[in-house]
Structure formats: C-alpha cells, structure tokens
Image 1: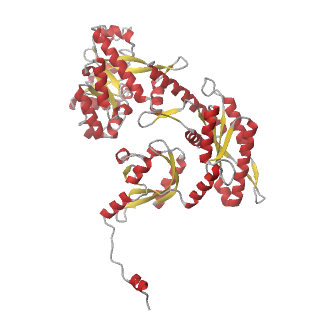
Image 2: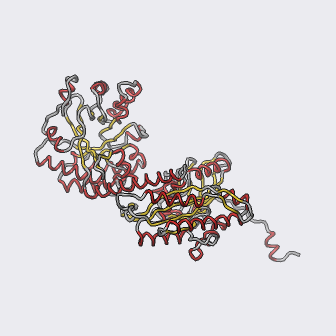
Image 3: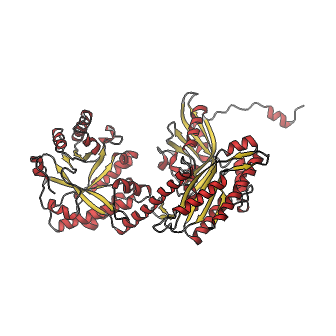
Length: 598
C-alpha cells in the first residue's frame, strides 16, 4: 500500500520547458558571476553578479577579450590548454587568478562550456565563476590557518604578503623571488601525496636555511601548491646603483639550496629542478588607477611580477636579466614621470608643405625627451613606456599646453601663425570630458580653435566607433581640424571612413619609403589619395626624404607632405625663420641638385 507521500511522488510531473524569457531571467538573477563570449573569445554579455564581482560594467566589457582582467599569474601554456580543451571537448574547468577593475586580485573556480544552437556548431562560450572547489577551498583554509601553511610550517600567501608589507615599511626596498618546483604534480602522482607533502616540507626548510645564511631580513612563504616565495631587504634600489650582485647571489644561493636531490619518505630519492622569477618593491613603485589617482604597488603586485617572470623560459641568468630589464624600465619610468610633472620635455615642430607651391601650410608638434643620463631617448622608446605605465594622457596634456603657449606667443609677436597638429592618445581621447578639457585649454590661452589640429590613429577611432564619432563631432563643433594619422596601418573600413567628421588623412611613412621602388605601394598610395578626395579630405604624406618621392606624390595628386627633405623637427628658435616667411626648401624643390641649408 502506497503512503500519501509515495502516491504524491508517483503522480506524473507536468510538462515544463525552459523558454528564452526564463533563461534570460535566470542568467540575470543568479548570484554566480557569468559571462558569454563568441567563438573568438570576445565578450558578448555578462550578468549583474559578474559586474559586481569584477567592478567592470557590461558596456566596458562588450567586444573586449577577458584578458582585460588578466593577472599574469597564468602562463600562455595555461590558456593554450584551456582553449584546446574547449575546442576538442567543449568544456573546461579549473582555478584561475584574475584582477578586478580596482587592481585587486581574486582567485576563483571557473567553468566554461561551449554553447550551440540545435546541436550544431559552437556559437558561444559560457563561463561561470563559482568560487573555489572543495579541494582548493580546503587548501586555502589550511594555508590561512593561523597565518601558517599547515603542510610546511612557513607563512601562507596572505600572511606572507602582510609580513612583506611590514618589512617594506620598516626596512625599505625588497627583492622578491618566486620559486616553483618543476614537475611537482608528477612527483605526487608517482610517489603519492604523503611523499609530496614531505618534499614540500624539505623545500621549505631549505629555503629558510638559505635565507638565514644570507643574513638579510627575509620572509619565506608557500604561496601556491608548489610555489614558494622569498622577500628580503636590499639597499640602493631607490638610488642609482642597483645591488645586482647581492640579488644575484641570493637568488643563486636559493636555487642551489632547493634544486638538488631529496630523500622521500618512501625511501626513494628524487632530483628536483626549479624555475625562478625576480621582482623588486620600492617606495617609488606606483601606478595610476582607473580614475587617474596614483596607487602604491604593494607586496601582492611584486609577488605577481615575480611569478610572471618565473614563467619566462631560461634559467637563473635569464631571470636576473628579466629583473634587470624591469629595474631599468622602472628607473626610466620614474625619471619620465618626474620630467612630465616638471614640464621638462621639449616640444619641437616639423613643417607641413603644400606640394604644388612648396609653401608651409602647418606644423606638427612632436615631443622630445632627454633621459636621466643626458642622452636623448627616442620617441619609439618613451612613448610606449608612457603608455604602459599610465603616463601617456598626462604627457599628451603637457604637449597640448606647450603648443597653445607657443601659438599664443606667435600671435602676440605678429608672426605668421601656422596651424599646429597635436597627436592625441587613446587615453586622452576616451576621457568622458575630453571636449570640455580642450575647450577650456583653448580659452585659457586665448587661441582660436582653427589653429589646432587633432591627430588620431584609426585604431583608436574604430575601437568604439559610435562613441568616437560623438567625440569627434564635439571637437569639430569647437572649430578644431581633425585628421587620421598613420593611415593604412590599421583596420580601415570604407563604411566607417565615410562617417568620420575628419578633414585630413596622413599617409604613413612606411608607404612613402617604398613609393619609388614598389609599384604595389604606389598603387596603394594613389588609392588613398583618391579616397581622401572623394570624401572631401586632403592628404598629407609623412616621412618624405627624397626629391623623387616629392615628384611621385605630386603626380598622384597628394596635397601636402612633411619630412626631412623639407625640414627636420625644429625648436621654437630654429622655427622663427619659417614663421617669418623664409622657406629654403622651395629652392631645393625647384632645383634639386642644389644642397639644402637649414
């Protein structure tokens, strides 16, 4: 006889189907962060839980790759294996470190599944962040128990970071070393977890012994399943002389102490090799946050840098070389930041010439910097440096201010004031108040807007095309001239080009260099010139260095040119004759056999 509960359970369930509306509701209401990408990995959608967990909004992420949250804790092999599993099996899961918008790191358990419509080809991927798995959670809890790793007895990750921050505050600059046991998973599989734990304890003991023998104040921690870290006080990092020998000696001592033969609890022996990475943490290490404020880099960031360096191929010498490159870049970045703030970078001007008359029709402002050693640093070095370290917007602001001051002086001196083109970076252009900033700068220096031209690369404009058009229209409304720089090196589209409110296209110097020797390049330039004219724009060729290039450009109908053939970039003193109407290149164009004197 069935009980009432059994009878109820035996009743047939009503038919139920998950409709699109219910799925949409579930996606948006779940507390688990979720994102959907297309098959190339570009983000299509994220749910509110994902926005809350990462600090990124949907509109910031749509169309971008999840690498926007890249922590650099995972190697390229990690992501290669992930994609291989997704493409072959349609599923992947594992622990992953990511970085929130505010810069903080977080560790999650990520599950990715391939989605398809009607059992056909994969159209999207769904990623679900669900916190650590039970085994990983148990490891994390044991790691944080009392601040000491339960297996090895050294500090766990959190305690290690806190201890190194205290050491940095009391002892000054620190060197960080990340040390990873190569093939530790294989050791666990072949000899058992018990033997693996014993090996970890021996490694921790040797790290501690080596640190004690070194004599410096030092902190040792286990910061991953098979990764250890050390941080020790070093002198001179904030000065001119980096203690390379000291750091190298400590790293070499540590590697020799760990990378050797071990006696396992099973009685067997095993040879262990390690990979190492180095980083430094000094009082001057800082980065700007999303709002432009400067944040001091902490121990977690230094540990992250050391772990990322550890993944580079090569031995200890490679790690030391990697560290030295970072250290040299750190010093150069600090000098660049100081010179930008102090206004010590120089702005020079290169004339732009109308080809059919050889008359100057404008100038391009270019930035020049002399490094801390008194030698010029090429723009190809310090511009990318400024971009990597969040200085490019401030640098661009300083250049614009310098240009406006020069224009104001020329107007007051009743000189022939030529329009000046200023390069705008993506960081400047994407500011929500960029139009208001430019308008305020023009008013502050009392410079008419038609004397300023803003140059932008096509890649900046096409990242978020609709937003770019809105900003361009705002700048155009002020009376500014707008141009596309380095045309042909990006991803131009005729559909986009016809909608851009720009007046000029600048042909990249790479095309000009091959203009007289390559027929295909000549055809490309001819097409660009024709395209510009059809859209009501004029064309400027960059990097013109020979009379033959001038002749070909004139034959193709190019409007203007700039380059060493006419004039090198000139400081304000050398530019004075040009502003006064003296143009020595005119005679050279008319009689190219004569030497040009500038």
